[in-house]
Image (cartoon, rainbow, N blue to C red; front, top):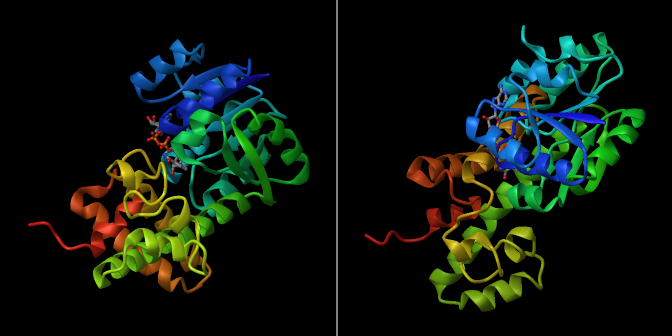
Length: 296
Ligand code: NAD
């Protein structure tokens, strides 16, 4: 099977490497020379456009920054759908709005190309380790086709429903995550200010009803959760700017169906402020800095 991989950045580069390690033939394209060089050094076949990669492939996987890049790669004048063979398959793993992937899938059908969404959780560490979780939006037959391919890059795949359902699951989950991280940061900062030992407080939260992933696995207070970004200056985690992006997608989708997301909106403003203060590349648990006294 020949797989074309479009978007070989922090996530896509590692995902493509895992396909290569699994013995697949992988053709790749990215705008970045550096990304292409790393891909080539790992045994990938570099192509000089998305179309050149896609026209030879049975399956295309894309991992792009945002919806405009996905529209460009799939639907523009130089888009890949126009050159793909009938019966081939596209898997978009970028985090984008649900409507864009539905539009791409509808266009795909005109070319007899199946398109599905499979956004991920697990971040760059999961991408490297091949332990990502894929949230798949596809019909049953397409899901059966994509599942074995995704298993080369992840340890879990969840069939969320029809095309677009993977993106819906992703943005709802990440909205909850953004809110819960801010809530844990607020609680930890308040406890510290009131004078409780933060380890004692975290111990109570994590054996009580406040317990969640943000309190237990990725506590924003340093040295509570082993291996959490808080213990290494909030580096090497899920960047605040990506959390801000995902909250924006959730709010945009909520607006389309006139659904209130009050806490999501507040969280978006908190992460926006965090990013504006120069923390865009730090892990989103650095939101706790919004609640701590300034040193100067
Ligand atoms: P990235 O910026 O590191 O990689 C994106 C790559 O796409 C870049 O190398 C860029 O050059 C390339 N690109 C842009 N336009 C292109 C085009 N027209 N043709 C070919 N290549 C093009 O981003 P990333 O961190 O790898 O994230 C990719 C996607 O995964 C995003 O949608 C992001 O929201 C999502 N995601 C990221 C993480 C994470 O922790 N980084 C976690 C979950 C989901």
